[in-house]
Amino acid sequence: MRGKVLVVDDEPGVCKFLKIFFEKEGFLVETSTDPFEALEVIKSGESFDIVFADIIMPNLNGIEFLTKAKMLNPELKIIMITAYASIETTIQSLRAGAFDYITKPFKPEEIRNTIKRALELSSLRKENIELKELIKAESSSLDRIIGTSKAINEIKNLIRRIAPTDSTVLITGESGTGKELVARAIHELSGRSNGRFVSINCGALPENLLESELFGHVKGAFTGAVRNKEGLFKVADGGTFFLDEIAELQPSLQVKLLRALEEKTIIPIGATEPIEVDVRLIAATNANLEELVKKGVFRADLFYRLNVFSIHIPPIRERTEDILPIANNFIRKECVKLGIPIKHLTKEAAEMLERARWEGNVRELENVLERAILLASGDEIGPELLPKHLTLEGIKEEAKSKPISPEELKFLPTLEEIEKAYIFWVLTNTNWQKQLAAKTMGIDITTLYRKIEKYNLKQFEHKGEEYIK
Image (cartoon, rainbow, N blue to C red; front, side):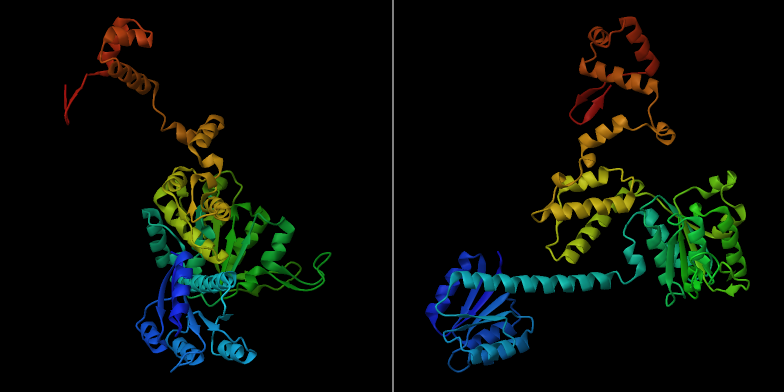
């Protein structure tokens, strides 16, 4: 059903014609030959997508009806019907808030086009309201961290505890897990929320440019320094400075960063006098800083200065219960942003998302869903809209070419476990006919008896819901 239409016209024939027409178009239709009666229906709160009202009616003309109806429900899309499309009546009705007007005799295509435009406008306004509600619902920075897992709840609790302090924070986790989202939540819940949140990726710039970005420079400090430049530390004064990929920071800049943290001052390139800065530092990395300290790549004193509070964000493959809430939240926001009906994952697609490894974490998940939303022609996102590597066949192909990591090796079964399971499987499938089982496995019957004894294998007979040895 496409929606609900109210037709108000003192001529029963017009009401009947439009009722038949709109019902064929898939609408629910109510008609009224009395404009006062129609106003009572609107006043009762009954919802209509479109109202068609005649301009010339006894007792209450169409313009008066339009004015009163809009007072009862300003969002109503009212289309005026007139047999006399004069400029005066047209201007009057549009000024009074009419969406449009159509003239008698009716042209079906004209009615369809008018309805289409009215419904599109209603849909757009509805989606704008949804977007505002969504933004309002996510006004709390913690609400933007989506998930119901124990790990996410612990992270939110930790954010609440450390946000009011001015201590430095180190956020660790794989790329794409949402480290900046956590950093912003800390800032917004802190006493510095009225100050700036400034961020920079330490691996995005070469050392000489990064130093200038962090600490600033004075005019003439180097070739091309034609004017003084404030560093981001100064820009973030009174707020929060987020240094992403801190492990990429060169040793010479590590020293300067440590001094800035300890002394709360910076010295721009080419300057001689320090500048005081009041900044809370939050750092993030996808590397193991402790290992880098052991290797001498990262300064131990800086590591301990950064690691006052530590927050680790696990990859989403380790918290699969968060995958669908993240996916559904992103789909809703993206559809509202694009101005299209909100799409939904099919059961099969949802299972595929939960089964995938998501090496790129939330960032990869959102990229996959953005592509699926744009490709979807209907209201559903099915498996066919997801990349091949997420399908079961794709996972198998990937597994063939992907080497097993030392961490994954820990969870592989031993050769004895595989042998025990295989022998039991063959015995079960041959109904414990040992001669046949031995032949199937290509081993001697005495070897089979020895293996049965070694692994303490026993036959179970299934009767009803009981297993009897």
